[in-house]
Amino acid sequence: MKRKVAVLPGDGIGKEVMEGSMKVLNAVADRFGHTFEFHFARIGGAAIDQEGMPLPEETLNTCKKSDAVLLGAVGGPKWENLPGHLRPERGLLGIRKELGLFANLRPVTAFDSLIDASPLKADRIKGVDMLIVRELTGGLYFGTPSERRNNGKEVVDTLHYTRDEMERIIDQGFEAAQKRNKKLTSVDKANVLESSRMWREVVEEKALNYPDVEVEHMLVDAAAMKLVQNPAYFDVIVTENLFGDILSDEASMITGSLGMLPSASLRSDGFGMYEPVHGSAPDIEGKNIANPLAMILSSAMMLKYSFDMNEEAESIEKAVKEVLDAGYYTSDLANGSPKALGTDAMIKKVIYQLEEADATAGIMEAYA
Image (tube, rainbow, N blue to C red; front, side, top):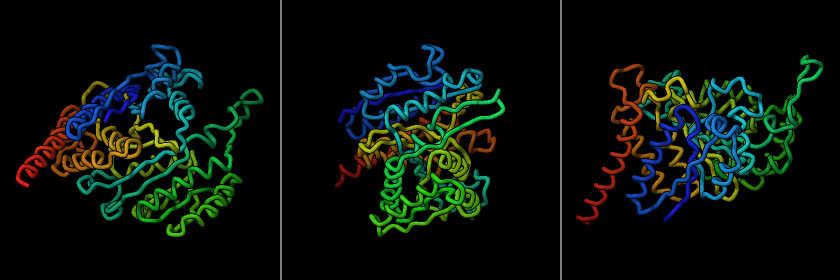
């Protein structure tokens, strides 16, 4: 099976982790008889440097002609002083909007072999396996353009949502909960915001369509505390853009490193953009110490959500788990150990596990 994948390495370590992702996908292609055709394009700071804008039209066209998008990371101090509309992050916001990627899925899983890397106590993170479903193209980030008034003494940012925008992401949350443990926590600020009161109304309406899903409402400040106090309490969290941005970053630290967390940004037809949660980390660019696992796991999400290649996705996830269980870590997880693997070595370990599994399967088949 042939699939076209738009590859946007972005900035900083994006190029390094993206290379690992493509190598792993090629190993999967060899094992399962697929073909992944990669088409490269620029976004973020790299696009600003070469083309004067964070999201060139050519990049959008490349993405629209592809079956899915892989994104490394964007941004860095090099572009911090540019006007707001030229910042690398505008490329990220723009591509989500232009491609209609309204649903952001961030799984947070505590690997047993990484419990000691977490800042939380082991008994609090044991068994954590949650999914945060975040609305991605509305809310405060996409309201009426921000402005400063009265000679800079006042500023206005507008939070805007339509009912339709709420309904589609809340449906995503319910559907995800149905496929997991049938427990959905809707996070809002209904005691203060009118948008949250409408959000809560929509959740109650949608709950009638999912009678098998247990639903609860939780204020965002209470949810933030609960994530630290008892993160295993959650199964699926659904929330709006700003709250989801903050809570998913908080939850990411449960694993001990942003370098372990993948994400998917989807639209209703299954098309998606897949990226690690971490940033471009320009301070470690080119040092061969970046953790490639979040990008590799993001590729697994692409196989699962956009291509319906569940077995292939699980083979990547299994290989990553086996590498970690064997005691191999990058420096962000190894607490400064001199035995920490570099980026390239970690990529090779994952590919080795994939190839070993393939060889074992061949042996079993031969003796069947």
